[in-house]
Amino acid sequence: MKTPPAEFYIDPLRLRTERERVFARSWQIVGHVGQLANPGDYFTTRLGNEPLLFVNDAGTIRGFFNVCRHRAGPIAYGCGKAQRLVCRYHGWTYDLSGQLLRTMEMEGAEEFDPTQIRLQTVQVHRFGPLLFAALDPATPAFDEMFPGVTERCGPLGLERMGFVATRDFAVKANWKVYVDNFLEGYHIPLVHPALNREIDYRQYVTELGQRHTLQHAPVREGSEHYKGKDGDGEAYYYWLFPNIMLNIYEGQLQSNVVIPIDADNTVVRFEWFAFEPLPDPQTNERWIELARFSEEVQAEDAQICEAVHFNLHSRAYRSGPYSPKRESGVRLFHELMLNS
Ligand code: FES
Ligand SMILES: [Fe+2]
Image 1 (cartoon, rainbow, N blue to C red):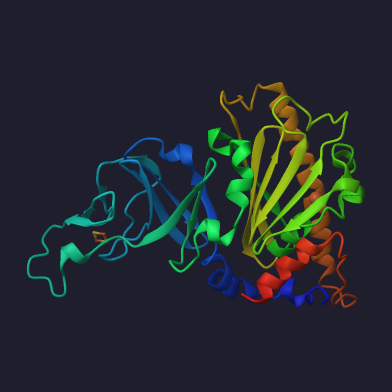
Image 2: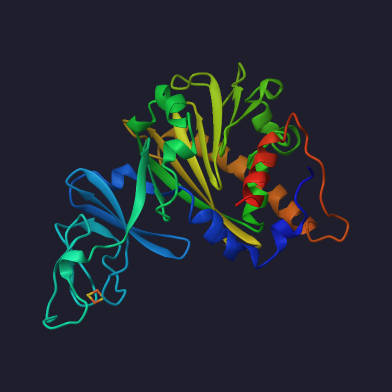
């Protein structure tokens, strides 16, 4: 098997199919648990073109499409706290479990039984401080999709982490170019000279799951950024099919979500999480340095991805071979995409 042909990356029509066949059936990060800390808390967001709403219903986290069953009005804007969900268009009122409770002036309406009307749900799953959702009800449960990940991360205590900061990076490349790049450490010596001084490339390991990979490497003695009192001496890089990356080292978690905009443009959303007491990202010196370093690495990745994306349009390239030792994760990603 060789890498997919360049059209896999540059075909402008492909994203539409990917949204249906891949993204709608996947687990996506929609927010963090701290946004729904108390009963009644809610927030709205979007996944691709789908408007979503998440609520804390007396301790149970629920997810809905933010789309009224009447004439598609928005059930909520932004975020806040509520006991009922009142559609912003004509005031149909739902309880926090999504059941329609009350409507006005609907007497005599045809085919209308309020007891049978509920907001349409999305699946939700909590992983550490992260809130995941899956649009398609047929999506296998998170732990079935990514077996072993929850257990393996158990000792890391991720559920005790809280949100610190977020930042979006625009990259002029197809989202799959960015994912490919994440899935191999092969490029570290050339693209990331400073990172190469932090981790031991010779002991860099890629483990394959069915739909996830774990790359890890020992942090080197004398590392400036990764060595500290909070880490276990290892840097872990998880990838969850198709576009979620969780980087765990030095007692912190950094999630990267690779968001396709169109065939040639991607946004990579970084979110940082840490143990309580949460550092102030503006003033905590160690944190400022960690963030600066991850932005340096990100800039190096963005630059090489943009160059590769540009070159994929060249008549001189069609496809190439994989390194069995270094690119097994990239190959798994391609197999999953081509079978979706
Ligand atoms: S669209 Fe929601 S009440 Fe009319
Ligand atoms: Fe990289």
